[in-house]
Image (cartoon, rainbow, N blue to C red):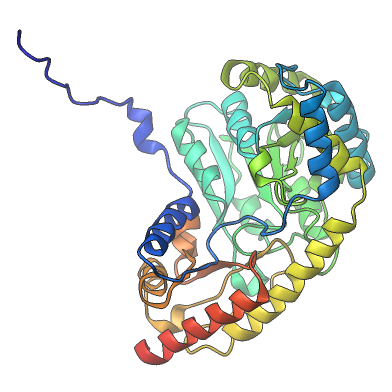
Length: 396
């Protein structure tokens, strides 16, 4: 009997349009180097290096022991949705209801589901660039047109509202905002979010406001377009627990949106994930209702690390770095090195043992920059700075 010949895998054409998140690829490469005995300083992954606060862990363990190990509603457990609605009402100064909340496993599903639910092939979606790479990936994957708005260093990587307004056309269906911003740490001011609302005017355009770093602000305050008069029903708020409470592995985020849209997003949850794990949702209630000192302490520590990193980078040949106002990244300008971003990031990993990301991992406008995460100890940050400085003195 002859053996069956394995046929060539024929993927759907849309898979060619699907991007990735380079941080995980660099992490794998760095781990492989460590397996060979290399010492690597990890400044590539966007994940707090703190443990999940003990009260949240205890709530999760207690939930497991009490039987929260089964299916729950696709939109999330009612007590958590109520807690999130109350939290959003208090922090964004608008009335949110449990019916407007959908709990999902991480923040990315809200990006995917929003674009999937609202955007047709050929529609235009405006997004920040450099920016979180999943925005552009999902826009392309679903056959829409990605319209980037460049974030400029001279504006402290704030969104240029005039450029955004000029990018709006009759085909614009969705605008994506992110503040504090990944990868730059830029923060939108109140005038910025109000300006975006005015630029939209009465046009039928929705806004996806990614505010996953909203509690990690070093200077100033967080401003949400959700808070602008007349914008609540036109916004999808993306937030979650991963960054604020060091719960990346718990996989839990949420979206807050008008109730009729929430019904459809919950239906997408039913068709994809069924529901978010029940015991993690119980822990989420404790995270929002319990003590918040750990959040404040973590933010203060990230600020200290930011200051060390920025000062150190500005003393390295070919590097210059503005001080970000939020998140836990720095985004130094490396144009004076004469090296392309990807080539330099690869060299720092292979030759200096420092894992960072090329600015181009966040879009074409990231060329000339690197992203370093400060989610590591000051000791390791100082080690990384010494290694990068030594490499620069030798190679530049």
